[in-house]
Length: 126
Image (cartoon, rainbow, N blue to C red; front, side):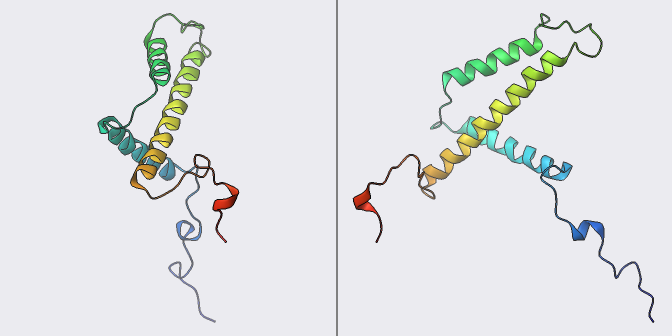
């Protein structure tokens, strides 16, 4: 019998893939969203709807405003309303960036949006 060395057995990092909820995955997504955000801000051909801009503005004003629905001096629950508004803003930003990603793909001509371009029955492939 031969004794196996620790080098022969697979390491835990080699045997499992990164979970979508791991810190490495989240850090990668943040970097990707940051890059996409910079590209979106420089892209003169892409327009963000004014309602979305107004929602971002309202979230920012509420977040920095000293007037809150739940006063901040209440220990433990004082920052809950701020976190809800911040969470909404982050979700809204993620949706805008995902929409911008789809816009760039369509603009490049790589993908046809099936939902946006209906195909009639007579134009189907044989």
